[in-house]
Image 1 (cartoon, rainbow, N blue to C red):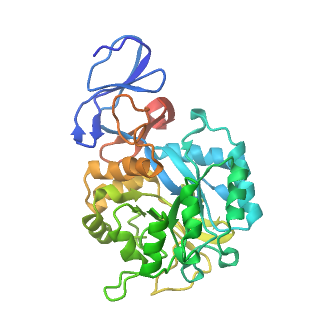
Image 2: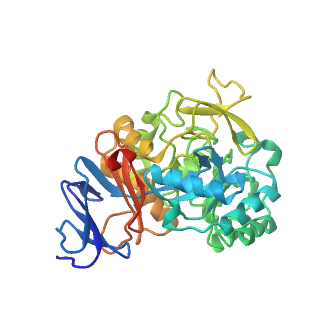
Image 3: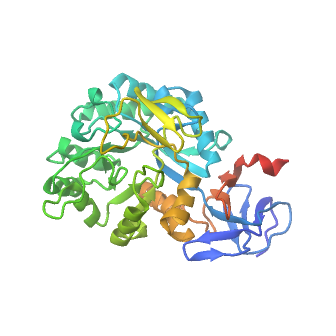
Length: 404
């Protein structure tokens, strides 16, 4: 196929597809940001970029991220959202869900209004794919780094106010199913086109199954802030694992105190398969910043190297209490390969295709196929550092070393 219009071509990169890694395979998109050729040489009015020594992967989709680069979505400013979008682009992310922690209603509404005011274009980094509301409908017993002062019962009027403030941008409501034991609230969310995720929960097995029957289809940071596996008295974790349509978030930080140990991630994949796992960062404002004190909502958090934990955390089995993460998406991808032991194809699926399926946009994003949108990330094949990020075919990030 010869392309004669204005377009961009990446050459000499190893293209990651669902079927495998295609070495030294060109990828081309047109001026409209649409992929037009995979594997064919292009000619004409072209910008040709040599990406030798790199992996070319579908743009990452980060389903769950509170902040980064010193800002938090709950800051409630357009500038904070823009900085977060730019920060995500530097990690190879082309779409993300800014996430709020439990907070007073007025603060949540202010964040929603800010999202509605935000002009989302490729010049401002990664695409905002909707609002992820984590809390306030959580179980205090499993509140983790969420402030228990703000936890409350589900309210349809409160939820509708979030939608009105944000211009109907709420995409996920993460909640404890035991806060809605009959499943009525979850059922209404599902009918309203919103994803319900199980979060900060100690629900028993029957309550969990009832929530899934009502429409719950996702697990927020699987294993974290939920009851553990019990082979005699199953609870929510067992229900989430055995129900095939439930997608499972995982935080692959692989730190000294990991959110989930690599062994547990491997066992999870063997149990449910690659198609149900979505890598997320759950990153907070401290991500990408020097060590020191930061905040998650109004909870004081200490960043110490690759970890973040509550400043006044209670000791739990000798370990500090984790508070979100400072993980970046390209590191999540690399950890899945280098530390968990998954293939590059599996890592790409968990960072791109599966999140696209969660959002129902897999026909447009998540794989590099002709006709799809040119959301493309270029990674160093050894270090997994981001070299380029393209959204809608527009370059939204370039490694500064490449411009020298």
